[in-house]
Amino acid sequence: MRITGGKLKGRNTKCPDGVIRPAMDRMRESVFAILGDLSGKSWLDMFSGSGTIAIEAVSRGATQVQLCEKDKIKIKTVLENVSITEKEMGVKINCHFMAVELFLKRCKDQFDFIFFDPPFPYKFRKDLIKFVDQYNLLNENGTVMIHYPEEDALPEQIGNLVLTDKRIYGRSIVNFYKKKPEEPPEHVILNS
Image (cartoon, rainbow, N blue to C red; front, side):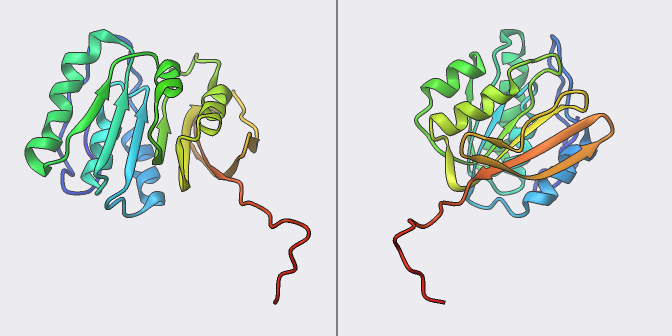
């Protein structure tokens, strides 16, 4: 796998043992192009696999990056992969090796970007987005992204998060959700 942009562009990451479905370079490059400059932003990479998405976020400017992967077989490779950001850019990626659902319930941080890339057979995608809303894990103008197969479907609104963009890459889809804008109270008169 290859970093597609930013200061580490062109660098390769190792693929860990165990079951893995790495995000396609084209899909990663497109998603990051949509998001634009990540300078000073926070990023959470869920179902991280190799850590490549988290590394890509740092490469493109994110400075507060965390990842979560539950497969213990991947720990050594993930730690080796993410060490590049600290060595070459001075940014440490905080790694959590536990079930994503448990991490979401325990997490006290908020993020500008949250990226979910669960295994395609995973059936609780909607619940992941609900957790982000329920536990208030997204900054006010933040974005949640989720990668899933075309044969599945996700609603346009999950809790207070609404679909703002949807991109199709072959049989893969990435949905982008943001917080629903608050409506002013009815008794307030707005001057135009």
